[in-house]
Amino acid sequence: MSSAQDITLTAQEQDLITRLKSFRVPEMAHILEEQLKDPNADLNTFMERMASMVDAEWQARADKRFNRLMKEAHLRYPAADLDDTIYRPERQLDTQTIERLSTCHWIEEGKNLIVTGSSASGKTYLINAFCVTAMKQSKSVKYIKANTLMSEMEQARIKSTNLDYLNKLTKLDLLVIDDFGLMDLDLDKCRDLFEVLDTRDGRKSTVVISQFPVSTWFDMFADNTYADACLTRITDKHHTYRLEMNGINMRETE
Image 1 (cartoon, one colour):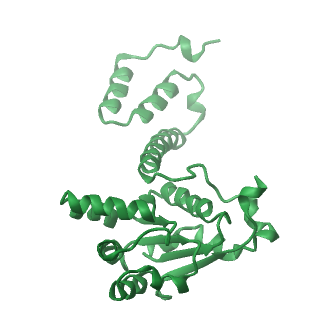
Image 2 (image 1 turned 90 degrees about the horizontal axis):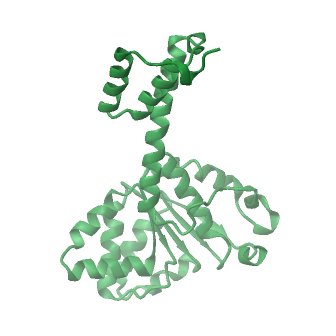
């Protein structure tokens, strides 16, 4: 009985595989080589064999794209997923809203999301799970703490690279700003935050995570005008969804 190892490809078959590799479709070339060496390959139809080649190439590219997006996202919990813990009664979560948000359709619409609640209630983990889903849909993501964002904007301004930095943020499909309220918002930082929110307003989605109620956010700003401008862009009920998380301390359950 012959096996794949016993079968030698013809010069024409080798040339075809080489050409596929030159077209930068290595997975298609790999599957074709396996098929040509498989004595039982003809048991499958032409379409089945072709679909196998295309599927392998598509999946390889999707995996490569996802890995690149994941590297650029800087998630705190890169392995986060929506597991059954969201249904635990003691977490007091609006699971219906979470399920709908988990589809990430709101990102395609450029809608925002505000997540508030007590410390260690699982806010960051949940949003990181949304981020993973978004990247599987080929959406670009960046997770950053508010204090770090303000610091990076300040450094970019000092180096006169703030426009380049702002353009990178503007192009992101999803920007997640965590620990909002745990940062100093002097006049310069108010202006920086406004620029970030304004360039994304109505076009790209922004998630703001905070342990402080939205009603307290206005007083965090050193300037009332910028406070109004920023909050208008991230709290408008027509463009922003909200999620409250005030259940048990998830760190104590680990």
